[in-house]
Amino acid sequence: MKTAAIAGSGIVATAIAYHLVQRGWRVTLFEKGPDYPYPHTRQYQEQILYLYDNPAWKLPDDIRGLTQSGTYTRDIDGERGMVVGGSATHWWGVTPRMIPEDFRTRTLFGYGEDWPITYDELEPYYVRAERFIGVSGTTEDNPFAPPRSAPYPLPPFALSYGDKILKERLAAHGIVLHTTPQARTRLPYDGRPGCANFGVCHVCPIGVRYSPTQPSAAGCRYRAL
Image 1 (cartoon, rainbow, N blue to C red):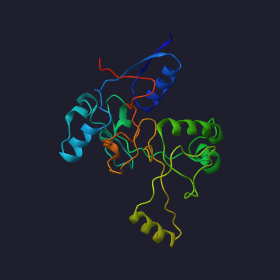
Image 2 (cartoon, helix red, strand yellow):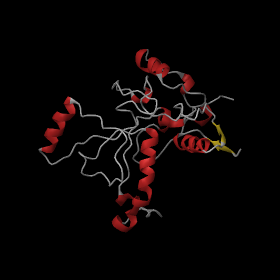
Image 3 (tube, one colour):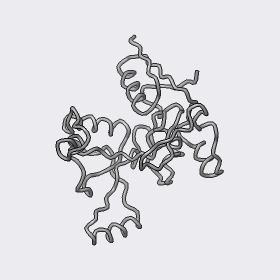
Image 4 (cartoon, rainbow, N blue to C red):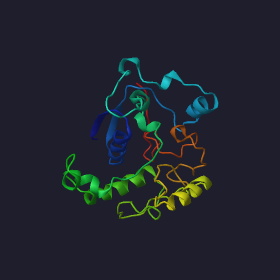
């Protein structure tokens, strides 16, 4: 049996590990942080019901205190996660694609560097990734959406009543409001139930938003060492 070791257990690392295991490899993932229960029922209860900020999920003291310059005003420490599954255990699951122009910013706009690959070359892998993590979405209401070779695996989440009112008023000024692709299940998918729209995606209590710690069909398990 072939073996592999991967440092870190974020969304990319676990995807690689999953596909290696599917091909018969034995994979060991190394992570500094603790297990992070999935579905996030416990985290939902702590954060939403009891307003308790559990120190068990916080960054270790030895890697806290990062600062940044420039115009970015968010707290970097607050956006990072060191648990099994990485930062994608507490993301909001929004999954837009880059557009073809993003790959040629030097040629088209004079800044950055052109990518060594094109959008068309990457596009089939977008399709595979969206199927793997279970993305709900559509391009029918988005005139800016890049071309696709296959539809999203799940239908989109409908605009709320308030969204519809806002869409109408923005349209009167030539501004488009459209749905957003998200890695949460509009319908049951890959062992996950359909979303109940709790509105707390970062700590989804029923496991509809994709997490790297989602149990897989391959029977992959995490074990703290």
